[in-house]
Length: 341
Image (tube, rainbow, N blue to C red; front, side):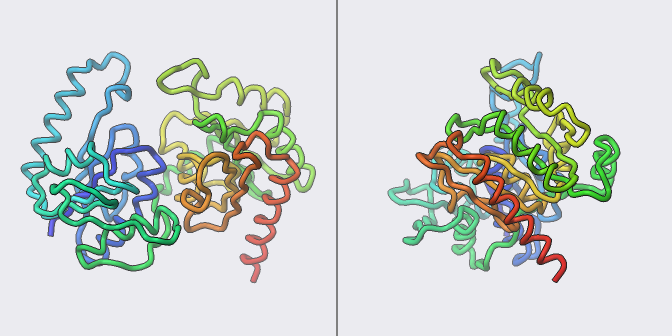
């Protein structure tokens, strides 16, 4: 059976789909093809469960100097490649069916199209209803395999980082050997998910006073004024300037593979909800996640020891350092205790 999984969304969305991919590949003893966007395609690198990777290019993801006509030409090539692959099944890997991925499913010519939701067009041959009880998105996506006779409890998120990538990043960052390495990820796309720079400064200072540690500082690169890909260079510099100490190392990542390998070096990470949260969990790192106006049960860290800190008034900016610090230390103590058991 030839299976195509369509997941042309954001970084975290694709990472959260990896347990579904692994489950189908393992049960059928085959590789699963995927349709993803060019921005996050490197998430699939080295994944043994992945066969062919079809690429979808978003116009706003095109590189400097790349013409819109070139992006459209690539889409046409992808359409042809999908049709020629002759898929038996196309799975729309979203929490609810959507007309855009459905268009790609129809273009593939797959005999069966599987999706979650209700009131769907006839093109969706296998409609999976949403469970009555609330669940994590990974558990919801696992339901998509049921129509092809596959279901088991989903495993952890899967990112395949090479030993060479880890060695190279470890050398670049001069990561300490004999002290804990903590990651602070300071960026969040949604305003209600953002924690202030001065709170990250106090958090870092408290952690280092509690025990000598090495802190890696992560952020979305770029200027806040960049409309297409706003970044937090200024916020990161504010934190670096305030601490001015050798225990913190700024990690200016140029691509997803660098972010993955750098996060894998951490013993524990603090982040707001967003793509980086799922990179951390995919790298197997215990994670403290701050949640504002998003569903912590649905989007929380999956498959790793974690603490989810839900903010008052659904605004991460209202979380105190005391609250976040206490939850961070509680998780650290739990992880250390389990490792020594």
